[in-house]
Length: 79
Image (cartoon, rainbow, N blue to C red):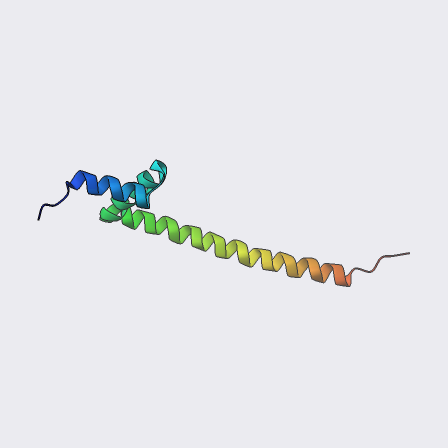
């Protein structure tokens, strides 16, 4: 039983699973980063920092919303 050439298999899988070249290159870059232990640690640190910033912003938004609602409820227009 003969096997199809490796290059044919790669091209077939590329066009089936990665319809755009940009996506394929992004995935290749991601594989490079995840394969290198130092790069993976740096990438994980960036992700953790982004998550902390998102949570901080979410908490501040909740405080702003409460402050705004409280201020609107306690403010009585003067005549």
